[in-house]
Image (cartoon, rainbow, N blue to C red; front, top):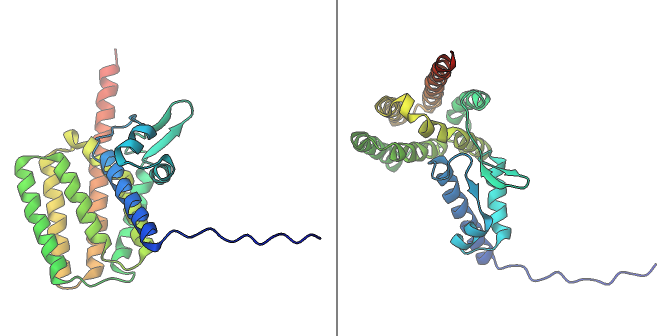
Length: 245
């Protein structure tokens, strides 16, 4: 048998270069994810690879990796002959996601909890103050941005990276539902509920009751979903009544 010639491996990319590429990819992912969650890209919007590659000054290969990640999270989908479209969201269809989030929430305070520092608590206090400010302005987009930041803060409570990752992924799948339904839910009511959650979490964190934080989070996820479900069903009944002859 003829021996195959040895093939020397090609030069590996420098560590700094790989790190920069990962950071750039993460930055693009977060930008596109936020645009989808904030409805800058509404459901049904087509994402052009050519335009996005030009905007971020990258080739299509790394861009497609970002888009594949967004597709795996259910935020976009590929339609043959059409392209990449932003998916729509429906409360009824996301019921399983909400139920899973409720089951996982208590684990954040149980699995490898990371004690909060004075700086951590100060960030939550600053978020409460920011919530008060944007409630006066009635800014729904600012509300969702703050909500996303608070959820990330809560996810830092657990040192279990797998749990942290899945909690964030599930949250991203449902975040835009809040903004989409805000006219029916009522911005003032959502601000009050969100502020109450932050106050309760802060009180538990101040005494180091990590278990309580997980259960507080579970309760507020449940209440949020119940409000959305009731409003979605009320809207369906109203539309059905309007359609009757």
